[in-house]
Amino acid sequence: MEERKPHRGRQVVWTQRDVILALWNWEQETGKRPGFNDFKMASRRLFGYPTGDVVVRRFGTWNAAMEAAGYEPIRKSAHRPGTPEETREACLEQIRSVARDLGRQPSYHEYIRLTGNNPNVGHNFGNWGGALRALGWEPLRPGRKRKYGQ
Image 1 (cartoon, rainbow, N blue to C red):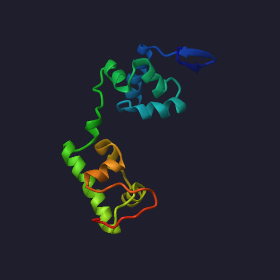
Image 2: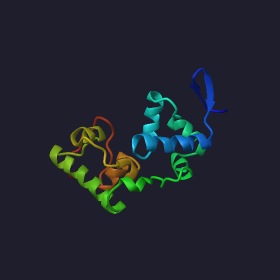
Image 3: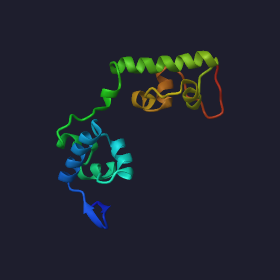
Image 4: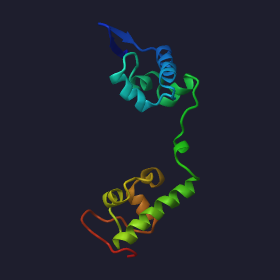
């Protein structure tokens, strides 16, 4: 099934070539490298751009589209400072700090509320329970509280 976009009363089929041209045009018009979220937002506001989902359907992944257009693909690790070990330890230290402040093991929601962020718990440990097990703690069932250090 071809992706179509309304265009002055007719349907436009976004080919790979058209998508690459749209990526290049984006950079020329905005002065910045195109990103998936830009296209998700821009296609709703600006005429002449495919949605980010159309780009992915044409190339399989956003990075494959970026490579086809001559851009260096973004790798997940490019957004995370430090080595994986440093990132994991920083995440664990922040959880320990919240536990010290509360005087007990925090829930995931408490942690997010108190720190205002999520330092890639899922990326580093798979999930919140994985982070707690890395600290040597046992994840609690909902509604239970455990004192820090127990």
